[in-house]
Length: 192
Length: 267
Image 1: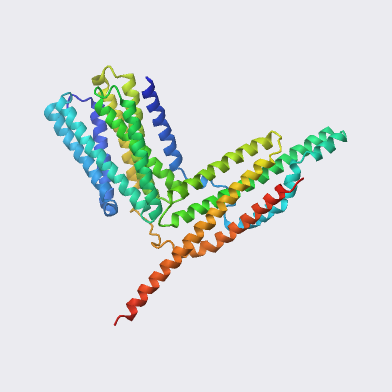
Image 2: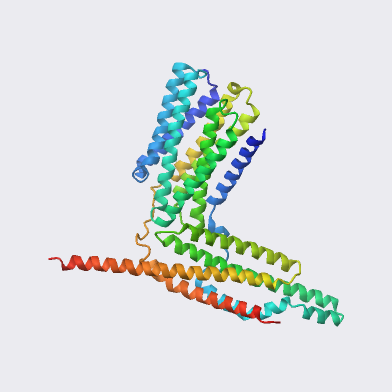
């Protein structure tokens, strides 16, 4: 089999795999706790625990424990704190995914979509996923990734601003549509 | 006709029977009103079977005239298939004007890109296997474009009715198997085209029969295409969601602001 044919074959297999994935039930891949009401409390908890999460990444505690000579305890504490940090980052990701999904719902309701805006949001999602994986790997290998956490939160913040703008835009359109409908309706009533 | 092997004739009969079943389901359920182009496509496929039977019996299976006429009829069937697919996508997405606009752009972009890639891959040996290249090129373009559209639909969490999903999946499955069959057979047996013609015919017909069975299952019940409120910016869904999302985002912003401040503070 020559190279172009091999390429075509691989492309065909990839298309078949992609087809199987795209036709599968998306609910199988959704994360638990996706409803809005349950996430409100979770967010509050994330905020409350951030100083502790930051503390889990601080080196001073480990230096102190190591100076006391308890190596086993240091290892145990490090392991447990790593778990906590991982759970926190996972929650942050969950927040992002929920907002991202909401943004898509808003977009699907809108009668007109800005391609550049949609692409920008898609790019934000990819960037977030990439950073999330990098931070996760760093935590797993025992580094303290505070600067990366900052950039991650920056992405979430930008997405929120974009969502707010989109919502305002939709709100204005809704008001305009309602105004138009009521004026047309009114004109019909006034006509003898 | 008699020069065709018995198993190919058997596959042919099964394929015709399966297509008749699909047409019967479309007509008996009233689904033909919702999907007129798809119904026309199934009808055209049946006409193609009859046309090929006549052509094979007059000119024989190995004549150049048969070869050309068979491929011309295939072109018409493929064109009808593309129109039927566009109809199904439009039925699915007509409520979502914005998404439909995006899907149209995706279709155009993906199709152009794949056509260019196919033309590039076929460069050099275009004259020797023109029809195979064209057929495979079409299926590559078609499958890539429809899968790209399905990806957009999935990305925006749009609920596609199961029956329509199965029909679209059937179209794509057939295209994918055509790409693989054409590529593998062309590379393995390219020196003896007439020797592998029955294998090619039976394998493509087998995949087509599988697709027809999927379509019969999809059309077993009348199609239910759910109607969404047509004024999305002023409907009740928006009014209900809007304050909830705003509140949610405000909290998210506050959370991130706090995160940022905590981080900016010197340790």
